[in-house]
Amino acid sequence: MVEEKIEESVKDKLEQKQKEFDALFKRRTEETYPFEILNLDNLNLLKKYIKDKKVEWTGTESVGYVNAILKIEEYLDKKEEAIKEDGTIDVPAYLMEAISFFLNKYKGNGYYEAKNFVKISYPVQKTILLMRKDDETLKQLRENIGQLAMLGDNQTTETA
Image 1: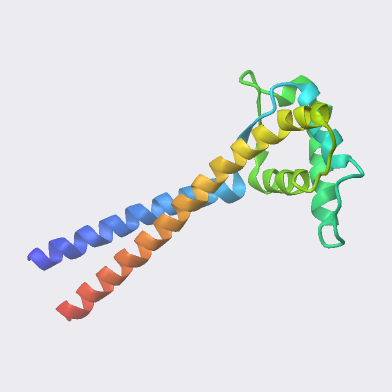
Image 2 (image 1 turned 90 degrees about the horizontal axis):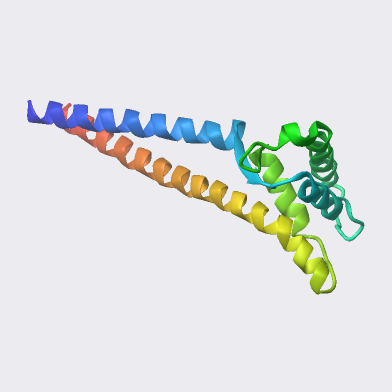
């Protein structure tokens, strides 16, 4: 009787962790993250830095590069509608990763250029940190699920 309650408890915890994992995985792969762009000027600045000749890409990176620029231009076409009251736009994770990747390839010169660059690179990194937190949580959940599954298997084997 006690063993059945323990087995049931493990099964319940496993189901709960799996639901948490599935919800977070869906967010990470299908939903969006808030990107604090603040205004259209900063969105234009982002486009300028991403589209600049100083950003180098390889053949395999070209598709991601072009898609990132096209998506930024889509946001710009929507103008103020794209930016919510809190100064954010909702950006899919894959696009944030592409923007971060290509911004990190930018090479600039001088204080004022660096100052402008930080206006957009800092919010990008803030959003990337949110995504990394989710990645870490997913990793922990995956480990917990594995441990609970092993514990459940051991209990089933012992009672058989």
